[in-house]
Length: 401
Image 1 (cartoon, rainbow, N blue to C red):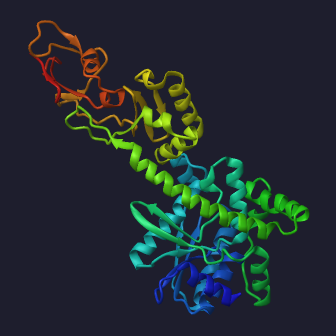
Image 2 (cartoon, helix red, strand yellow; image 1 turned 180 degrees about the vertical axis):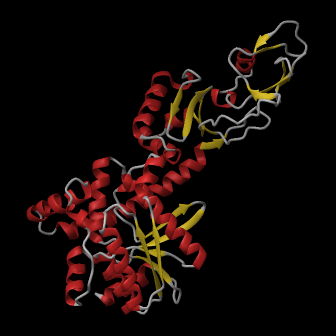
Image 3 (spheres, rainbow, N blue to C red; image 1 turned 135 degrees about the vertical axis):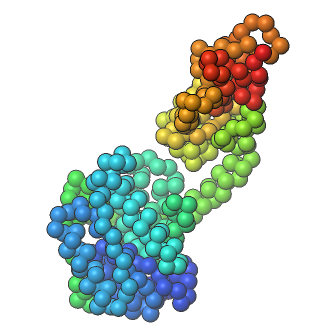
């Protein structure tokens, strides 16, 4: 197993030669196996452990076990304590999402402060197959069907974190055999048997059934995942080229727009084939899900380039708008904080002003419509007012008489 381990690291270029790497060690079988293999391979390393305080007593036990392990094998040890439930409640994330964010933020900080080139995790072949099925049932598309990759690049607080997975060639049975053969001590996570967790049910119920029906399912699935990863790479390259060709910066008439608006011509959207799939890929970086993309494509197909301007579609972070033959995409508007003593504020629906050169007053909303500003742009229009609350200008667009 050690020879295959070293060969895989070399083939995948996981660790820069001679540099100390960071290992994520929970104390379970897999991460203990990883630590011992890295040590046996002569690779310099440090150990990081997160205490999420989700299992009373067990988490503290695990933390102490890993600290003792690091001392025994002479590795630098870094640990951190999280109030994960409080973090999840404050952020609105699930416990799993919060724990993942906290874990990788900790790893990124350690790599940045101590110049570790990457963090290595103990994900293995069975984890990759389980991830494939989880993503298949969630409906993540081709991006989720390549299982777990040998190397991932994450952006954490504007810092790049390289995550390496040197145990991917090995199944759980091989790891268990190595641990038993070398009499390695480890701690058992009691939640691994919890059937309320979907991943555990796939591991403990679905996979044994599949192995009974198809004895070679593990090897077959690994081959399938590799082929899907190759196909996914070709697909990603095409989508990247398509994105560069059809998504353009929208030239706003506002003199100082604080956000970037992207534009896709409806004619380019209509030319996509398959339309829904490719539009989903174009909009996915902005957080739009498949259901919202369906709404967009249906609206466009019903009205074509004459789609009614002003129709809005939302993702958790962005807004898309049909506007004069284009689909505009921008970050969702954040209301600016304006000091009440200042004479600058966002315009309001009932606002009226007397445009310079005119005798009567106009609604600011009508004035903006005449300029053919999109609803996205209109959110950023500000007006200046005097001490009596009279509008003196629609800033950057028209002064009042």
